[in-house]
Image (cartoon, rainbow, N blue to C red; front, side, top):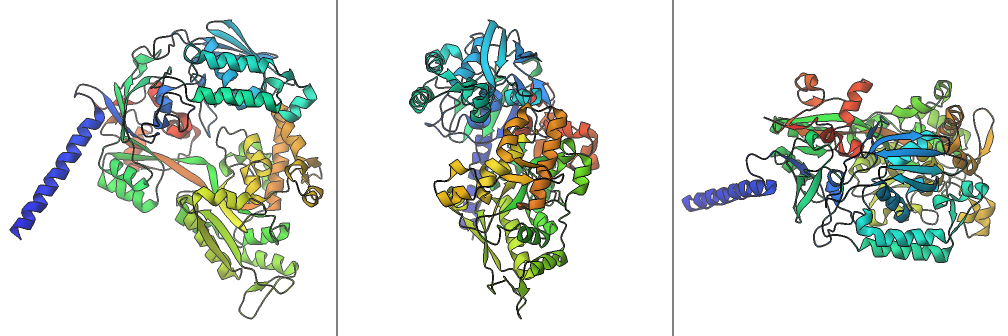
Length: 632
């Protein structure tokens, strides 16, 4: 027994030494250096390279190394100036003035030609569909001339804000930029009417042969470039391994005085969420994003008294999409009945106890943002889909369904349903809620089972042909970029959400003549206005506020009335910060009040502060502003 104990103590001592050594080695810093510890992933060497557009990019280091003209903040729609000193919109162009002393990490000055280079080579960027040309006024001034008709300022501002323009330094990639410019010069312009329909880059008509040459030049660019990234951001990458990355402060950064840390160490926990939580629990990282299930969250806070968790609304909802290619889900009334039969509170409790339940079906807007874009009288008039099994039963009976002696519903032909809900097996946000919904529908008399499938084939299974499932789980009512709902509503009709629902498609999307004959994307709204979806989606970016508010209201109302799917809950995400190592945490007065478990803020001012803490929402804006400081 003594021998066993001695061996156990020896093993424990070795493990302790490994932890101590790995902890010291991760920082790569002496005791006087100010270090923040981060967590995230990146392509493992030798796949890692300096070209941010190569497969996998540079992972978690992106926001520390690369910048754009401005930094968008999701949900709040704030924009923080970064490389742009100003952006002023005029009648047919936007004038951009760059900060005076920005330089690339290799010492070369950052100029307006680098912005031109970014869009000429990366001409697939969405905003190029609205650009006519980029005029270089001088080294620090450029003018972006817009195509006619000119899109509205809010769309153009946020499309510019979603790009990291300082990722293609002309002095490194000039060969490929110049080649792209030569190829674009060979294209002829679309007419104004054609451009509205085609959305060609820089308004150009590019045939297949020319596009192949553009694509080849891009592929050549992807394998070019330095071993380590060259950006303009506040940190440079000094070392990369499979498990650790070391960043060092860039002394010539134009806001270097605001950056309070000398080094950033990033640990790669792999794909297992538990590994990230282990690093957080042990104090080996100072930042981590996401809100885990309640029991894990409370365990982390109890184990490490230095941790603070800030919650915030996520501009995305977990939901179920109905497959309109599989009867009876092609019937609006049947979809409405199923929506009434689902008790969303139970799905939310297992999916995200902090999430927020809507009373709508799906609208194309996250529920927290509806009041910003939809007329109040329309919101008030929307169908309320609160849990109502009696209403579901009434609708089914009106459709000719009836229960058999076992209480199972049968369709008008006497056939029992056997529905399948598909879900990505690795998507924890949807897996448990999907199981709850399947059980609820079965208990209601609609036999339903959940089928969890590998994520690599899930989307193909859902979207190809007529789809393999009657219902599928995914993010719905989601705004991945910015909150102007043109993009998120478009997903319902033209994006991946539309494909998963097998929304009736445009004629050119089908080879089968029978399917082409059945195309009908003309819809009628609450005010009896009938419209063609594609035509409206093309025009929204060019509308003024009164016009797009009217159309967003019509389309959100239709989406809800048609019950294309069911929004189970709007997600709540969060940020973990370690107050033992960090000063500058937001809502300081609330940290003790809520015992370090801060709820979703109730005021816009508090929400803006919390949103800035999250890498996905605002990059590393708190570093740029000097808010985050090392604990003295």
